[in-house]
Length: 330
Image (tube, rainbow, N blue to C red):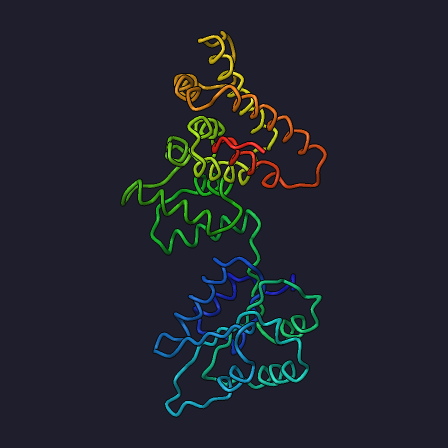
């Protein structure tokens, strides 16, 4: 599999009308799956035809095989998309039938067989891969992700320079779709005939919002639960450590408690930026003394769990965010 053609090479072959009768598509990047299906569809069905969908967790194999063996009097083409193909491995008869079809496919059909699992330890998937054109749609590494973003930006006529793409990949590189969604939003904001570059991204406050610890302090201060959860998830996605988040909230609540007790803030470094400091009086009004004390206990407990319990950051801290914003402590 490692020496096989890349998805980009396979798509170039499709553009050159070198279309296989059967493709085995392995991997769970939904965006790459959709791109590949779209590219095959545009070329194979450019003169008309049908798209037919099966999912083997719901549909009967006999219906699929009836479709594969059906004969069109007018030579009409069919793109047949089959998901959950590992379900077919439960029956030796079904395996034999699909392998028999692969040996002599119907020229009017192009069959795309999809498995979310890239599992070549499965004897069935391994056999399919050896007898068909196999397409790897696992989430790509960063260098390949950047190439895909360049390719899709060109298709969408989005003007963006390479350094900006690299910057977006660093922020949103968990999937191609995440990067493309952010790039599309930026292209709408910047307008036509303008190039998205590093400076535009760096100076764009909307883009910064989801990845700023200070914005998280702000949303918690305002008790905005929905926004707090969204920013917390974004911070984790951009590799901000939970310990850093806990420290940031500890700084916030220390200053709120000091302000509530003394009517003013101490001088010197507080761990808060100017915007948070300016709005601290309003945030403090949202919390009672008891809520502030309860929050400190929750932050302390989260710190201990982070170091000792086999829990994810989400499992540890999302309940804490809910409790803080709703003022309900268990």
